Length: 113
Image 1 (cartoon, one colour):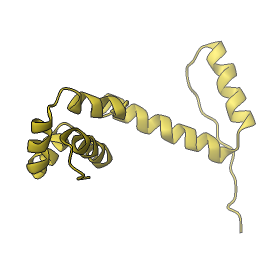
Image 2 (tube, one colour):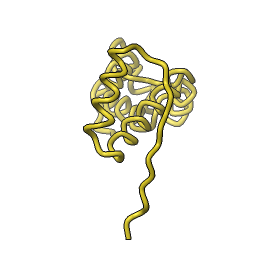
Image 3 (cartoon, helix red, strand yellow):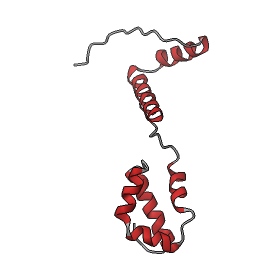
Image 4 (cartoon, one colour):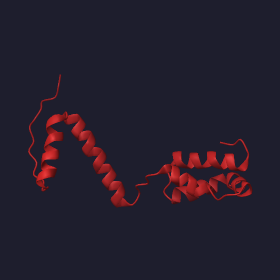
């Protein structure tokens, strides 16, 4: 059985142009899509204001690996648990750390991943 719907009214200060744009979105999108967009915008804003929004994952991998010699890459792989701790302290996600490890394997000439 579908949930009962209720009409909501919100007050928000914005320019006339922004108001027209917001009205277009609210009137043309289903409520589920509007909520999805608001949730995404809220989470992104929270991450940006909290200082942990890290866009550009590829550049982070390149920044960590572009100047390494094969010997340095081998050392990092040999001391991988320490490197994970270091990368986590920098705020890197586990998928990003995995990409760094894959790149280190290429640089060092080993087949580790």
